[in-house]
Image (cartoon, rainbow, N blue to C red; front, side, top):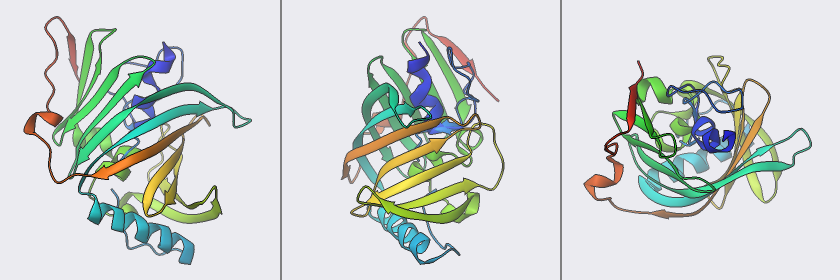
Length: 233
């Protein structure tokens, strides 16, 4: 059951309420990871280049869809606890992160609140966007604030055909040590998220397509009858 919480806790970095099952993590603010993309970095040339790519991505993709694959890496870099699904977003702050395999789970934001729905537990947890996003991967991918507002930026060597940038939050948090962002052809292709316990979550993004708009109901969620709803401060 620990597997089912990975995408939630990798994309947001402090709790939407319940603890992960069988795994030590700090909760909702640590994810989808995905998602404060902008510019104005005072780092070296490579960091500026990656930041400029990120800025261009934000300007070009105000709304988009894509798919993801997520896994947890052990100390030898071997992947386990695999998940996959699809996502959509519309700035500022609206996104839908749907885990489809191996177990369904949904994280959805209407720009005001973020809801995490677990159909197996029949439970929805709700938290205000400002409290849940912060300096998280979700803020990186789906937010609108400048990257340098919440993160210290540094360059990393090119690897795997990607230009890499490291984002370290100014405010220490047990749920998030750093996020390494791999840019490929002007689009974020991979995130490596290291939490406060030294565990690394890898999120691979693909098939990202710009979209002009979404139906209003795309980012709205109403818990099914009989669901336990928990509202967090």
